[in-house]
Length: 280
Image (cartoon, rainbow, N blue to C red; front, side):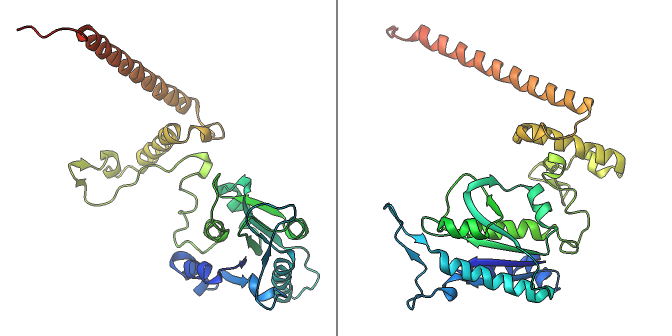
């Protein structure tokens, strides 16, 4: 799989994506990462790639010409690699908060592609005309604004790359982790058996794999219900698991009511003593 990242800071991208698991996959020929410097494609002798926005306003806007020419260079490289000049419009992603939030499902889908072009914006954004011309997908990594698209591009590249067969050394790793089946991953433990007076759950030491799997599934459901209840609506839960979630919520409600009554009793006690003069 080949990533083509159009950016003003290629060294920033490459420094991250050439290390750890992704770097190892690149060395093993499973992935290729190409960072194209948009400044290399500007017609301006001062390497300028931005200008003032029409209609006024704060900030600058990246111009269409250098972005389009950088994209064309990536498209030509893809066509040359495939040996097919008419290979069509490659999947091109623009990283922007003005989009649907990136998910594990999207990562899996993108991992089916041979080539992905990712466009990193800066300043107040990119001339809309070139976006309309080249972009196939708009992706956000969250409802917040960053200084540029490089960090989101690296996030997407990392999430997609680990879905490519062979990138992860453990074949189970990509299928038994958080968000698989819309559930968070179960708690993990390692040696020693006791740390800081906290012990590993005994079931994990039992050697009974069926019981361990059942416990892990239960913990995944409970953890998702507690931390990401929004995911449960899309998770396939058994009737027993649904009842377990309902019991957890009921216990939580009872605890909150009890805490509320305790606070109310404390407030009433305090009010009873307010204004009392000390007795001598």
